[in-house]
Length: 186
Image (cartoon, rainbow, N blue to C red; front, side, top):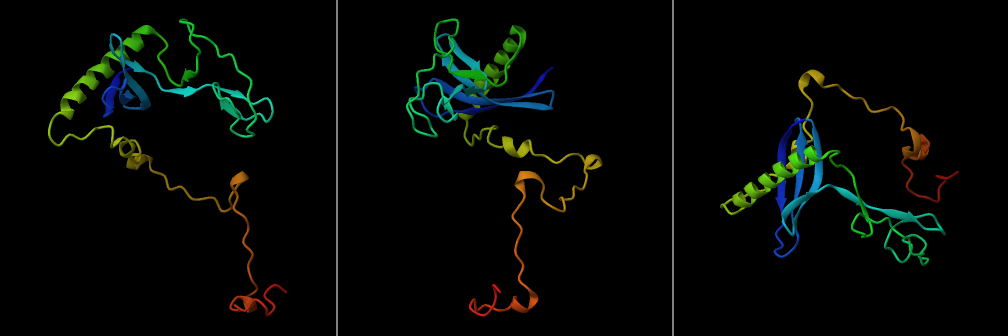
């Protein structure tokens, strides 16, 4: 597995620990977005994309962030949920969405991303700088090669829960009648 592309979006707020967002592409085939480059005590490090952990409201069952005091749905006061602790004893409030399984993969990602981050910082000082991260969405919505292009026909009727409501049609003799008191609804 090779990291074939790294894109960096520098953050412009001085003094903040979050220095940049990043996306990485593996083997020109798989993209992982929203990695964060954070300034740590011993220099920048890469944080994997994550999501907030949630707990369910005991009254209505709605999901809420672990530190929420009140339910987002019903508004009732939530009991304090004891979040799992990490190895340092801090409450674990986030879980990685994508992450390396072994340390050699983590080191490979860290080294490649931090190198690209330093290069991007150098490029940002040059006149006319444009972040390569900004055109990310356009690049990954590319059409398939012509040999694989298939004409996809829309279904004749909507299916499943996304069906549109049926339209009522007026009889032909009432279609032009715009006076609502003259038998349109008869």
